[in-house]
Amino acid sequence: MKKRAVVTGITGQDGAYLAELLLAKGYVVYGTYRRTSSVNFWRIDELGIQNNPNLHLVEYDLTDLGSSITLIKDADPSEVYNLAAQSFVGVSFNQPAATAQITGVGALHLLEAIRLVNPKIRFYQASTSEMFGKVQAIPQIESTPFYPRSPYGVAKLYAHWMTINYRESYDIFGSSGILFNHESPLRGREFVTRKITDSVAKIKLGKLDVLELGNLDAKRDWGFAKEYVEGMWRMLQADEPDTFVLATNRTETVRDFVTLAFKGAGVDVEFKGAAESEIAVDTASGKTVMRVNPKFYRPAEVELLIGDPSKAKAKLGWAPATTLEQLCQMMVEADLRRNAQGFSF
Ligand code: NDP
Ligand code: GDR
Image (cartoon, rainbow, N blue to C red; front, side, top):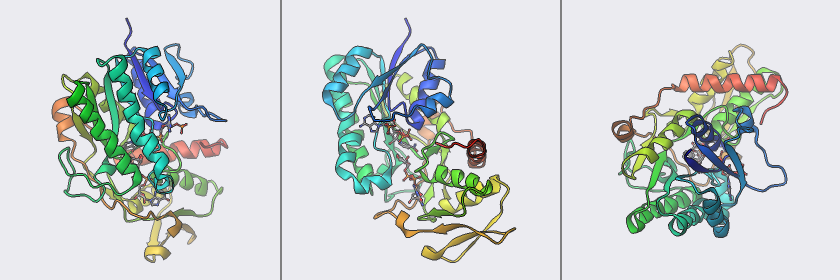
């Protein structure tokens, strides 16, 4: 009998990579997507798994308890990976209540469905380094106190504690992965790394003049998404449910990522000015290729994230392999190819 898994949020970056991994391991995968007027399967299409006979696409909304119960009943899985969320931190300031319902209470709906339908199902919750927010220790580990700085971070913290609560109250195998930022060519274009690599490609191809960004001083611990979904899977194969940090233990500024991305496209840049008037200039042409626009600043910022994944290495044998330079180069090349072909999602 093949193992069955539910992956919520298959239209997102991680959902697509995780579905690819599980299919390669011989699972039957029930991947959920939302009914919208124009559902977009470009990621699973790009990975070539959309027509895999072991992949079932299921319409589902995380905010609906009944829909969650039906999903778990019909798919009858042994593992559920909850990756669906309103995952954009910036938007969570404008839509705090919707973010709470989807990103916070949505996870509870799945836990309730598991408790009611089959408490033996193993559950993975996509927790986040945003829960550390205004960081209380450097680097951050599983026991570092939380201090979320956005409605998204607060909603994720609720889901994280609910996962632990269901573990302790009902003996449900609920594991929580505190994942630091992970990127890839499949990253959404609203997130800063992909916004940068896509814009760098467009500037290189003469399709855009200037990239506009917000806070260049924010520091992030960026890893490669494809490696992080392997960590999720390992968490559900462990003997005990637990909480794990997945990270690279290296942190760089957004400004550093801008430099790397332009370099990846063969452009050297120099930064001038400061704060709201900071720009980056192409040293060869003298043209301004990046400028700060305060409209991209957030009401409250997470200044510095750096995670220590030692526990995941010791207990799961998980470690990141791709360097930030390799990751950035991979993303720039994918965006150069896509933009040259005239499309970019
Ligand atoms: P994406 O934003 O790429 O994907 C989110 C997915 O959630 C999409 O498939 C989206 O569907 C779906 N979704 C949104 N709202 C609902 C809803 N109401 N009902 C059902 N599905 C919904 O996120 P990532 O793949 O990057 O991240 C996966 C998970 O991991 C998220 O929970 C995120 O918060 C978390 N995380 C991500 C990190 C990262 O660096 N990538 C780090 C730490 C945690 P649609 O396509 O229709 O919008
Ligand atoms: P983050 O990712 O908020 O860390 O959440 P994002 O890429 O959106 O921002 C990273 C940092 O870059 C700064 N920044 C900008 N961000 C965006 N999006 N656009 C800009 O123009 C810009 N300019 C500067 C931000 O202020 C921030 O400091 C991601 C998401 O995937 C979450 O779902 C996940 O939980 C965390 O990573 C870990």
